[in-house]
Amino acid sequence: DTGVSQNPRHKITKRGQNVTFRCDPISEHNRLYWYRQTLGQGPEFLTYFQNEAQLEKSRLLSDRFSAERPKGSFSTLEIQRTEQGDSAMYLCASSLDRGSSYNSPLHFGNGTRLTVT
Amino acid sequence: KNQVEQSPQSLIILEGKNCTLQCNYTVSPFSNLRWYKQDTGRGPVSLTIMTFSENTKSNGRYTATLDADTKQSSLHITASQLSDSASYICVVSLGSYQKVTFGTGTKLQVIP
Image (cartoon, rainbow over all chains, first blue to last red; front, top):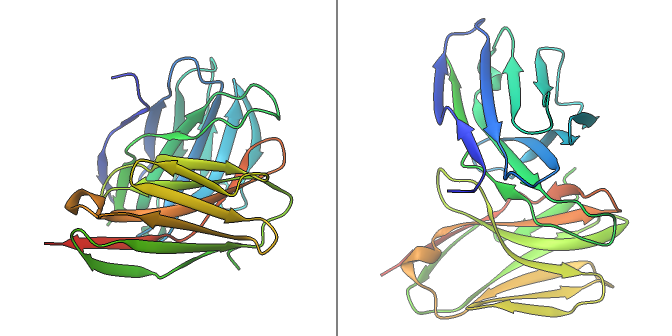
């Protein structure tokens, strides 16, 4: 399967614990995005990378959240001191950007569902 | 306030019937608009993409329309199947660096 892969699929953690999610994008894709989705809502943008550079972060991404893409391939999203409000589906997507004239679709993984108890 | 509004919020139709989902947006500047299908517990999958100059685009039983003047798009599903049950999300992209704004989606349920 050459799609976007996310691990783990599900994570249950206690409030105050740290969690880390991993995303492996489609190999030739240079852009990688993180989104958060709560029940009945569309995905909300968190951050995106162009290769290894983190180019934009949403205001939703508090100081407890950090994302990395060290070699421009896989990415990790870490949440420190989790809160119950962090419970959501965390989606990763990747795309191939060839400049402003090419609009590559986002290819999503199946997400990591986080439950904070 | 979400700049991409979808209606209806949810819809139940009988198998074999047609339906139309609506998307209104205020996002500007407009680059392209996509419809995604999201099955429960899975990530969204792109169905169609439309740029500013396109009015209609089809993908099998899915037909999307776009009116850039009124900033409205619709997704028409023909001869619905049980597997069409999913959330359908309208996504509008801005400018040249593909910043996207997602609608809240329409949850479609097709029943036998």
